[in-house]
Length: 346
Ligand SMILES: [Zn+2]
Ligand SMILES: [Zn+2]
Image 1 (cartoon, rainbow, N blue to C red):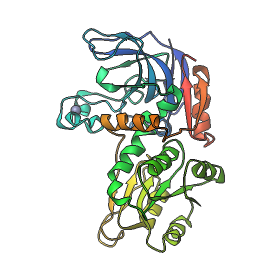
Image 2: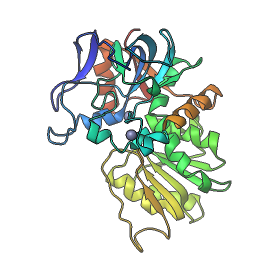
Image 3: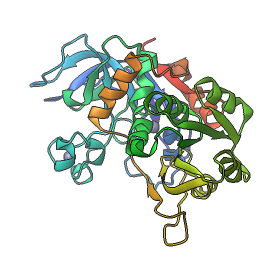
């Protein structure tokens, strides 16, 4: 079968032919309908050989939906032909965190060498993929595959981030979304669907801010040195109760700290590597800073339910598998509005 692989450190990904995968005991073989292209892959492909936590070659794609093509011995709970979405942050399934459905925080994944598809295990940008357990599949139940596939990361990750701050997002509060790309433009819609907060979106181009307004941002601000003062001004000096940073680079993380309100939350989601000092006087009183990772199995079910209710409309552009390298190129150049989706069997 054909697959998009990252093969050499620092080189662009290539479409190659690899052996057809066979499901082992307990595993599920999916015929991939759609796979998402995520900016975190570009971060991974910028790492040096020493920083890479898994060997190459790697089939990319940590967002996948497909139809069940075959079941390994003993795999139960899904049937051949079922349309399903893949829960990506695989864990052991039995530690205390996994028992809560928080496989994204599995206590044993590192020790057992369990890695997510596309981030260590063979990913979704291929004609077929192996899912290690039916536990990691959620029925699409009528959702359009192209619309649904970004929800497995670009929906689930911001959903988890918003959920942590729900008690602070009361009427009259302000939520700032920094970076309105794949995750950020979904975050704006989730904030609108889940809260009464005023949503302020920050990005570096007017194009991206136009998309942010189209998907529900009340206000938009160019993300530059004037952004934090602008947010303070929009909030009467108070600052934003919640700042979600989907870039996570040093300038945006610093700006997040400068625009957050007393008792607010700063949540750094982006893999930009920026850090925010915490200590008396470094931030407004009682600000909480967190860097979450992905989301829980239950939250993926909730996100898909929200999409089924019509609350989330992901902007997508689609590519065939042969054009997948161009999708990464365009994303790297900042030219994708919303999410690029690969149709490996399209
Ligand atoms: Zn991602
Ligand atoms: Zn676990």
